[in-house]
Image (cartoon, rainbow, N blue to C red):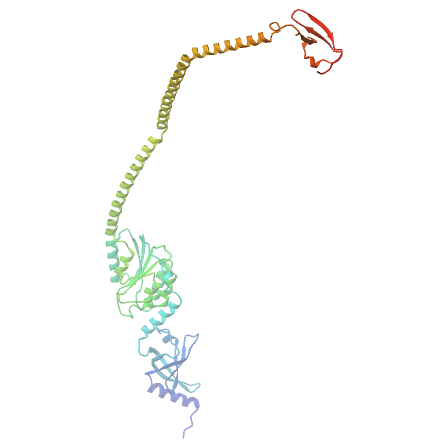
Length: 416
């Protein structure tokens, strides 16, 4: 028997394996996945009773549309090969498809879930579109029918808009990078709105708008972005990331741009309302002015002066009436007094005359000349009439009558 070296044996086995199993489809569950920094992916494929090592080299791995996950059931298109240094065989994977669903569908759901968790779809970060934009950027294929539809709608709705077209690839391997670069560039040009889009197609045709690089460009943009990809039933990742999703490119223009005819009608309506409003204002102001004029006429200086003059006139009349009344009363009283005055004077004269007569009589009755003179004389001291009771012993006094005056002295004083 011929003796083989280990290397020769492994070489022969390698040749047999790779020739016999140059292309196989193997279904199993992913396990122990390792993403090497070289870009290669190492993992184990297993079922309920067996395992086999597998590798997907960088070139093939870069074309994967979805993320490999532990426990995922997949179908692998691969070749069986032997790694001679260790004498172990493994599957060299060319492509991997999720079992039960397409790779693109899974990749779509995985990226949607990832970006949603990062807040790329949050309603509160959505920017409002301006009501009357003046500059618009269209990021699409310059040769696509979608561009012509958008230009046509824009021309019929709002010719005041300035539109710049950024010609990009909208499908194929480099489309996503091309679109994201155009978004970043347009975002620096101070447009009012950026529209990204294309016409309808298969999921593969629209896939550039499902790439994470496009989603990040939309999320990082300052300018409001409208995603208008495919038809109404087509939903791509850019639709969720954009500030507004349009069902079609044509509808995007309807969303972004006001309708000139509607604006004219609106302006006519506003004009009518404004005219009516101004007329009402003028009418109200006239009413206010009339009220102010009436109020002024009622409260003006002239009016107040007239009122004061009228008050003075009334006061004069009242005063004149009062004076007249008092004069009349005084006249009546004076007439009454005049009629009674002579009688009162005569009565008073008579009264006084009688009083005088009575006084005269009293005087005459008290006059020593008219009294009995026998035994009566007037006592005086120091030229003053005194009473005899005021004299004291040894006082000098005079005794007077009508005819003679006697000087006397009190020799003794006794009470009777």
